[in-house]
Structure formats: C-alpha cells, structure tokens
Image (tube, one colour):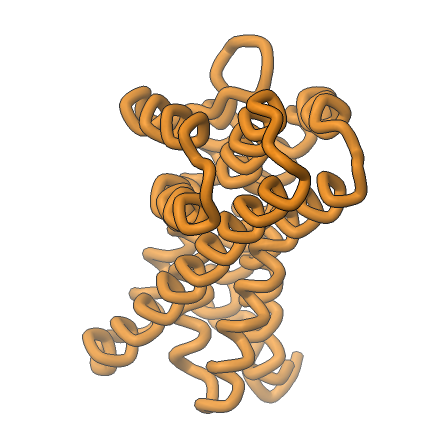
Length: 239
C-alpha cells in the first residue's frame, strides 16, 4: 500500500472528523439568529457571516500549518512510531469522550465546553454587527473548539510533515476547505432565505447521530493509525 496515499487518506478522514464537530456551526447560527432578531439587513447578515467563515478558515489553516511546522522543527529525530502512538491514543481517548460527553444533558445543542468560554462566545455573538467582529468571532470559535479538534489536527499535521512540500500545501488547503464546509453550507442556506429555526431543528434532531459519528470516526482513525503506522501491519510496498 502506497504510504503517500495512506497519509492523504489520514488527512482526508481527519478533515471530515473536524467538519463533524458543531461548536463553530453553533456560534455561527447563534450570531446569525441575533442579527436577524435585531432586524439587520440581509446584506449585513451576509457580511458578518462571511467574516465569521473567513476567520474560521484562516485560523484553521494557521493552526494546522503551525502544528505541521512544529512537527518538522521539533520532532525530526523522534521515532515516528512513538509520535503516531501518542496521536492514536489521543484520537481513541477523545473519541470515547465524544461518545460520552459531547453534548450537555439538556435540550438543544449545548456543547460540553467550559461555561466561561460558552458565555464569552454567546455574548460576542449577540454583539457582533460588523464583518471584522465576525472574523474575530470565527477565529475565537476555532480556538475554543480545539478541545475536540486537536486530535484530527495533530494527525493531519504529522502526516503533512511526511509529505513533499507541494502536497503539504495542498493538504493544508484541502483539510481547511473540508473542515469549514459546514460553515459554508450554513452561509448558503441563510443566504438562500432558509429559516435558521429549520437549520437548528435539523441539528437538534440529528445531534446524537453526529455525536456518535464523530466519536466513532475518531476511534476508527485512531486504530487505523496505530495498526498501520505503529504496528506496521501493512508495509509501504503493499500487503
């Protein structure tokens, strides 16, 4: 099995896992809901949501690029099997935690994040009226979500560090596009005139499935990384 293809597959699956997490989507819908409630014009609504998405996109790209650079700069002489074992353990542990604790035991889609951070994001979402504020809020939501996304981001970063430079750049961009795709979907729905209440209703109806899918995907990717990169069951030359 080609090792480059395996690394690309790890990056792609990690990006899909990242996309399945809901904090940034929750903040975006909350911000949009407050803007609509304040009778903001449709043009202003689209500007602040565009700013939010750009902030989330830029920050996600920077986080992954920084982790990849750190891998190249700090870990060149560390046994890769040891690093992959740590990443695999982190993904499996986080996957189990997502199964158990992702949503709070209450109605709605309230996530299990520190209450101080939740209050801060909620207050900023209410007060956001300009694209620059939306950009800042999108960036902040990415950092707040690192409690969930650090595992797929770390797996992606270490995989990127083992790819040729052109593929590293493509991998960072591809990961970021996939990871932020749900935000773009919300933007298109809001821009197309769909009611936020219907979007939120869909999220509430499917939150347990999304929780199970995200946790399961983390566990599966963790086991795959452990088997392929640590145990070395599938040599690079093939089966």
